[in-house]
Image (cartoon, rainbow, N blue to C red; front, side, top):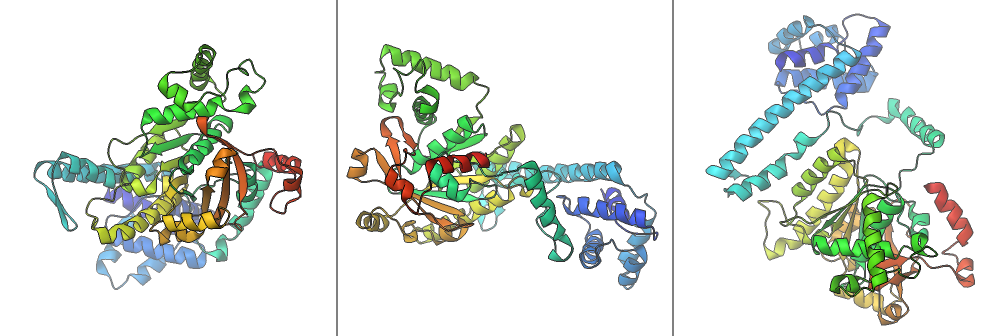
Length: 494
């Protein structure tokens, strides 16, 4: 390992005043700086840190003479610089191959140490922070909590730099988006929402807030369904409240209510099917045929993405979520993760679980989820959406104010206001239920102003939420544009 790290340093230090070599050395440095490699030897770390400072200031790697002068009073580093000088520099694919080797060696060392600690916890116990943990279950939780670093890719998405020198990257990104028509937002299927939010983007945390029984989970499931089935994305839906079987049935019923697919089709006399009929086995013979067709369609249609349902067998911690997501992403890239829902997650081992600490722990959990969304897969980011419980006072205020919520309706969580990128709400009362409607609004939109409340239609018997055809009055309203214009605008986003 020491010899390989010397070779890495040799390949980012200038020994000749050659412009072509200086360019190659700088390319090597950029590869190394974006990697997840760390220098395990302290003197190597000091040398590398000084090279980084030099590159930031002068946009070129440091020379050997400069390093010798800087560390002339440190005998140990001076001697190490002489050893580094004897190594052979590597460039291009050879340098990248060395990066992979060093990273693999580091992963092996980290995994060996982690497995040793896991074994010790399982057998005799180990003190972790202030807690002494012992037993197979605790060992497994410790492994999940600490293995995410090993799952990282060898290189990171760039997450640091200086405006003086790096600002040209802004132009590069802009013209790449313009040239390739790149749109990173993933739409929800509700035109008004998509028009204002422009889709969900990597690194964003969205919260779907509602009071008990007022469609926060149903709304999340409709978004997930649209993104997987109609937009061909790979979606993970993590359920902490419902069973795997319940989620399967609901998604199937939502699929049966897709009027774009089934209205006017050979199944026009059978759709939609209701959740209660599926649960109780009371479908008509024709609907049973339709159900069989729906299952075949979901299993075999190549035009659909993947909608994976995961019901953890134990309470979900942030470390469990991170490990699960990183592992699954290696199998098949994930576009969106749904979490139902934050309040039902479990705090990490060693967390203060007293009643007074509930608010602190919940806020920490939200902050951790935002950081997870930002840093997923080496800084690539992931779209993370969670349902969230509105409190009673918030519900009372909404009842008195035409269904409009305020941010203080978020139960116990000041951090939700800060960390969430978008906070949506849904509102129901008896009149809306009778009219098969739900009011939807936005309390926060980090990149744009929150949009005004609008009304969507529901078919609660099959858990479907959709946007209605607009009336003449709605077409003239300030909050909405003409349907034809919206459709054109939305289609341009896809």
